[in-house]
Image 1 (cartoon, rainbow, N blue to C red):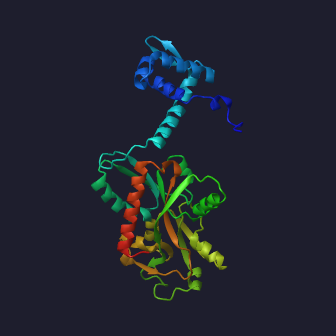
Image 2 (tube, rainbow, N blue to C red):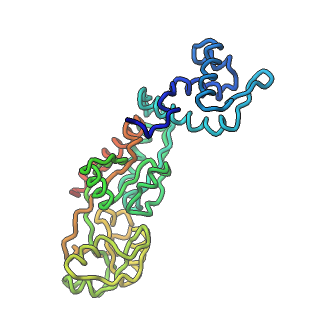
Image 3 (tube, helix red, strand yellow):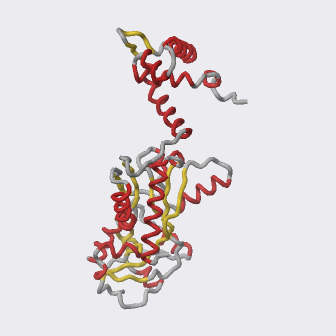
Length: 325
């Protein structure tokens, strides 16, 4: 049993790592002993035991202080981060929004940001004036690596393949490293310029497929959820241009005869409503559920919990006011 765990770790007293961390931070046995409420001989004894377990001297006396060995310098960042995570899990720090100075990084498309960030900015100004937000472009329909690497605290968007994979893993009994929460359901519509040859005729499936199309693709791949729906009924459309922002798509469509697909709620935020014509899509497409996705390591972090609550509140307020389902 547990034969895969190295013997040095199975028998290691983890309290020794707390002593090691303090000694490395203070570069002094005396100061480390004071911080830990221990005697200096107790600290020296702990270091001796850790030296024996790791087969390394770890620190050497130098003048009135100590000098770490290369092994100690390499080991310390991992030990400090592990202790920090353990402390946060066991004794989480309460997030006080009015006093906080956190910076959160959110990955989302421009259409999502246009709908949510205004309300979130108002919430921050009122409840958390010291908190900052950074919005970075969402360039993929699978942002899990972005979240695992810590490049973003949360991704907000349409992630059907990710959710299917997470559900399948959970049902198979696998550990799932990500959590998600639905924020709202978006309705997508066909958009063209005023005066477009198709603006005053019925939008049939044949008419739609015969037109020239612009696709908003975060990854640059010329294939989206509308194309998947078309393929399921044996049809396809011709995509002649891809861009990676919804606002850019609106600008292009206003100045061309291309059709595109935009979230209905996003069109008013472009400032181009009077120049655009909206038509229902001539085929059934799956509901577009916009989700907040985050790494499970953030699940019990009180600052992250606050962020999730604010996003959900803003989304519910925005879409209840707009009447969007």
